[in-house]
Image 1 (cartoon, one colour):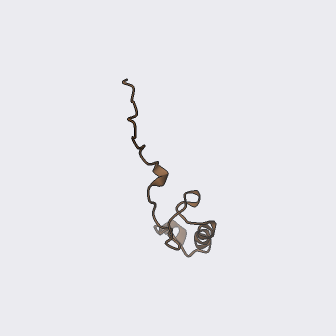
Image 2 (image 1 turned 60 degrees about the vertical axis):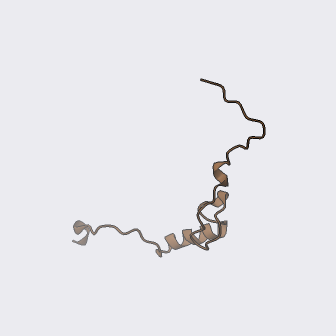
Image 3 (image 1 turned 135 degrees about the horizontal axis):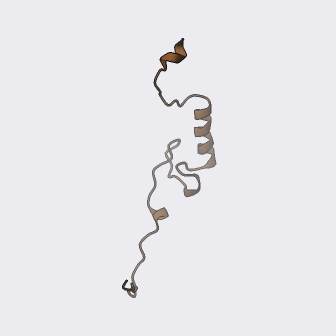
Amino acid sequence: MPEQRKQPGAVAAPAKADKPSRPCPICGKPAEHAFRPFCSPRCRDVDLNRWLSGRYVVPGREDPAEEE
């Protein structure tokens, strides 16, 4: 494999973490890498509370056996 040499004055490609991220789904601020996809622990906890309280629901099929 040929050895890659750096050109003088060449700029390295930006790291993946530097790319713009999606906004926080709770408040719309830019997401922080440590709390992704949220911007803070507060927004992360708000989302968890919504799941636990039943505000968010994943729809499913009705099972006829459970109705009897």
